[in-house]
Amino acid sequence: MDAVKIVGDDLLVNIEVSPRSDHFDISSYNPWRKTLEVKLKSPPLKGKANKEIVKEFSKLTGRKVAIVSGLKSHQKIVKIPNISKKDFMKKIEEKI
Image (cartoon, rainbow, N blue to C red; front, side, top):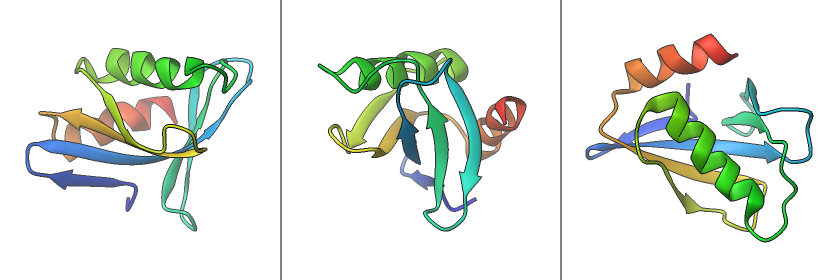
């Protein structure tokens, strides 16, 4: 999956966000944009959607997550430290 890359000790994940959904969900992989499609409950106002992304990805991986690109965009890059691509993919496959 091209949406997930290892850079040093960190895992970078390209995501595309759809706010104002019924619930948080990692719905699918978009091969054209090379992103994971993520649905959020929060609206994209005052950083609420970004906070939900950080909270849910932290809960999913058990790691401190940060958004490193796209704070005001639907397309974002999430950084997850100290996790292998294999472990992350296993957790994502359970959600998809």
